[in-house]
Picture 1 (spheres, rainbow, N blue to C red):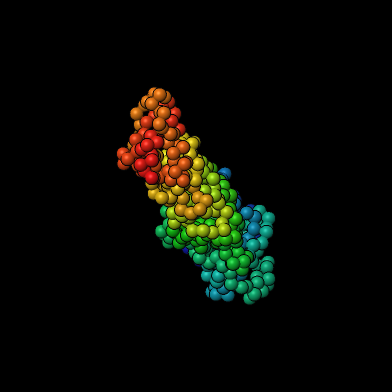
Picture 2: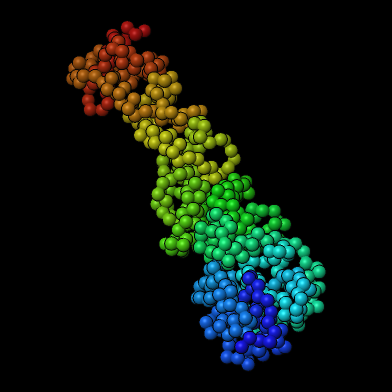
Length: 486
């Protein structure tokens, strides 16, 4: 049977709010007192159980289809409010959450019973929202018992003077855009291209975790950090889409305040949260997004795990290139500066990043090349003579090596092997060396002009013979041929 006094039902109102208002409007002191006369429980109304909603529809004259719009369905790890799925920590708990100005607007603008006019907006029940979407002021939270938390109208009646005072003294607060987005998700409306593509619980949790990163790195002015909760901080970035998220990460990494680039700690709990859920379909898009951002922002090697194993290295640091190519960090840095890949700076080695393909182009060639020391070990010539051959262009160096004093010089191995073939000679017996001198000795005695000696061998002006199994140290030239070069 319909109650003697009914109240209008609002599209954004919760069923339990309507029940509380009906109780006050019909002279009951509380919802508990009203329900004690029935076989309906407050929890059953909150969760929109069939029998309870049917009875509420009868009492109010409101169709069941409208009443169930904002049902709250519980679960072990999540709960639903309308079309939105939310995490456990977003539940309101045993407390009243409301906007004092909305309450007083309801109270003063009603044409019926004012005590039964204020109603609970569904989005007030979501704890990640701290701001009124209409007045853009902070929401008020008041702890309550389990029974009292279900009865908003009785709370308003008992605290009307205090609520009026709070409504007159409220100030503006950040977070109204987040509140409007939460409302849209509860209603099932589309309002954000990127976030709407994610399951609502994932979208809200992403904003919360991303906000932690903002706060962790103090990536906003202190007054902004103080005025916003983590969800709002994250929403302001994530709502702009993937590009804004990556730009945010890049801006922090570019900051001189960041002493090291460690992907294990940079993202805080966001990385561990995504890694935990990476195999779940609802997390696929956002997990892949942050994996790709990390690969473009940190020197992740192949098979190194951020969220997923890295398939291709995009960036190197001085430190990782040093490890991969077996060169000292100083040599790596000097070679890259000489090649114009990086600029000179005072940044630590692990903070200097560059394109991995550029490193492969430089160090890949040098990995197969020969250093001055390598040639010295094979030819047993002073390193100064070998270096002179390279600097004069007789032994071409690998592009990007030896750009300045003290930097590592690498010679193309193919060129070196070709030179070895050209200056090799026929094998002779010891008896045929009476008028010969070792090529190494000849180069040393000729004022160190090794280039002139080798050039004469290559052009055929100076004939070389070989005695013994060793290579360069057992190459000999005729004294008479050598004399004709003077």
